[in-house]
Image (cartoon, rainbow, N blue to C red; front, side, top):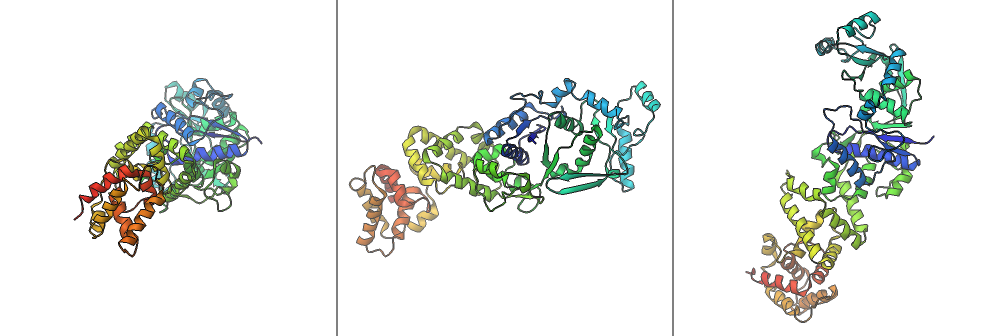
Length: 515
């Protein structure tokens, strides 16, 4: 069997994590089996459909690395790929007519008021709410003709078989059964003539030879309706695959409090496509071993439906950061610099931080935005120097956005000073002499291109000369003077990158701050 799967969104908003995982699972499954991945736009709800949303879906998925074999943006043998266009082309009309002729669908003329009264009665009697036939399921031809003659609007509903068991074999959950008497008759064609998801999607799946319907478990309750529709036409059913929900670590439905949910937000935060794809793939799926950091090809090679878990997949934001950090550290510095440059110059990056309102007092979006702008200017001004700076910070960051603030002290004329660090380390008696010694060394011992060892030897020599027991009281005030912070990359390495001119200017400023 040649695998054919479809990603069929209803673009009414932004591409979120759940939709990304849906597309990714299908992409990996199709590639694993050398099959076909189709993009089909389910835009039958014309009041909510957004062309901008469709464009974002396509562009964002392309950034992640998900490419389609057929779709509205590339064409294919099953065109058109937008359901509104398929409706206008008359694709669905013969099939609804056939379904009605077979007795598996009927016209229902209920008014909105009648439907509301029906639901109220069901609620009062503690019955399942839904349309189980009303007047029209078993109406005579004369009753239907009379209603049509009066010009009453109607929908076309599926006639779900009664008094039977409807079952499917779900690839994740095994056999699942329903009492058909608990399944309501869904609308297939709306009053405006537009097909609903229940009809158009199943007809399209048949016409496009879809082999596997892969979707979230929230659609499991619709499976008996769809299975019954395939059976009514006498079509072979595709394989049903209902994937688990995505929840936060607290077990609750994924929301903004668990981290950003719009995929573009992750890109703006500095997550790269590869690690994001790796992370999303592991939510609710396992390769069958304890691997976590996987390349795209490893994901393709390992992915199969058998690895999809029935229990909810947990969204662990810290794990995403860890995977992204691993990927950053594995990159060649020149490639990383290019990645950072592309990231900084993507319009959505700065737009995101400019509009971000953070609930975390430790996160200042405006400060992050400024640091990223400064980093971009620094790369443009002196790319070799920026490369050396990025190499130093490469082992310490987790996202591309982290480079902004992590590198800021390198590019500032004089870095902002941490008052607590200054108070802690600048008050010792030897610090003034230390700074004088290093300032003097900037004209003699230290030259551009000096090795980190030269700076290490100078500090150790000062330690011996002044009989200071440990190196810490020398290293810490020097670090604060040069970076404004008590922590950062290796001191000797960062001194070599800063060079004597920057070191001297910062030490002169630091001397003025001594008590």
